[in-house]
Length: 209
Image 1 (cartoon, helix red, strand yellow):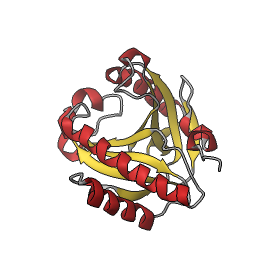
Image 2: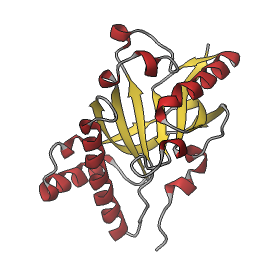
Image 3: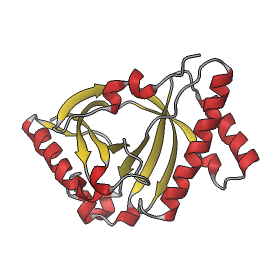
Image 4: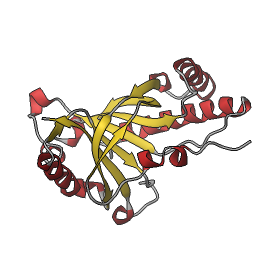
């Protein structure tokens, strides 16, 4: 049985250039968990630890059905209360909005044959067998981003505003404005990779003015 590799099946989704580019994405399926707080904090790490057991529970069920797949890269959607903190550009926000008030939705993409019932059953199974507090917060999620500007960010997360500024300049030059949540795909495992070697896709959904 051949294992499905989503990073190869959806290669444009998991790759980006080191300069801004416009690319369009269709609807995709995920398991996800929402939270709030500093990404270097314990709550964020705990939410990651809730997501993966559910992903592997789904993988084992699918493998038994002859549809094995590799669990792909971690992703995140990020936002904050713009009415309270201001309507900053994606390049300004990381520097002006306190990290502890950012909200996030962590994501792991799933094959198209994974559905809501399968995710709910897997979360229930993990909650029962592994007794992980809050694992029932992991849910099925679909996202249709459509037209986006994206760019590969190389280096520490703290330096993302430099890359985001390039995206914003490219957006303005092409008559495009924000049309969705800031999206990051973590191609590197930040627990094992030196900050200067990190690779992160930064993606901004956009629309014409």
